[in-house]
Amino acid sequence: MDAFDLLMIEQPLGVEDLVDHARLAERLNTPICLDESLRSIGAVRSALELEACSIVSVKLGLVGGLSAARGIHDVCRARGVPAWCGGMLESGVGRAHNLALATLPGFTLPGDISESGRYWDRDIVTPEFSIERGRMAVPEAPGIGVDPNREMIRDLAVRSASFGRLDRPVIRGATHGSQSNSGVRA
Ligand SMILES: [Mg+2]
Image (cartoon, rainbow, N blue to C red; front, side, top):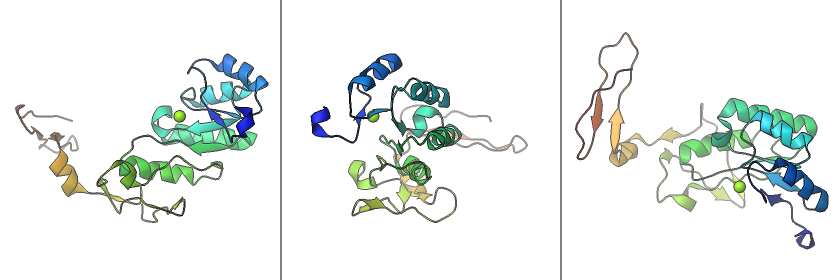
C-alpha cells in the first residue's frame, strides 16, 4: 500500500487488535487511522500510547456523544495527532452535530460529512446540507443550526409519543398502522 502514497489506511485490522495495528504500523510508511476501535477516550489514549494509529477518526454515535467526542478531540490536539469527523447514514439532525464537531480546531483532516442529497431524496431538516466546491457551510442559527421539518417527520412517523413534565397530567402516545394505541407515562 505504501507505493500508493496514501494519506492513511483506515482500520485495516479488527476492532480489538490494537497490538496488531501497532505491529503493522511499524512495518508501514502509510499512516494508520483507527475508526471502529476508538469507542471511548480511553481507547484513543491506549491506541496512541501503543502507537497503533497516528490518525484518529471520531464518530459521535460510536463514542457516546458530544462530551466524549470533545474529550477525544482534546487528547488528539494535545498530542498533535490529526483527527477527522467520521460519518454514517445520519439524517440532517446527526449531520448538524457532526458538522459542528468538525469545526473544532483539532479536526485537521476533511470530515466524512456528506450533503443531504447523497443519501436522501429529502432530508428531515431545513435548510438541507449541501457541498459547494468541496466545502459545506456551517449554519449560524442557534442550537444545531437547522430546524427539523416537523411536517415531514409527522408524515413519515410509524409511531409517536408525547412526553411532558411530571407535574403535567397529559401524556399521550399513539401508534399508527395496525398496532393499537398505547399510553406512555414519563
Ligand atoms: Mg471507517
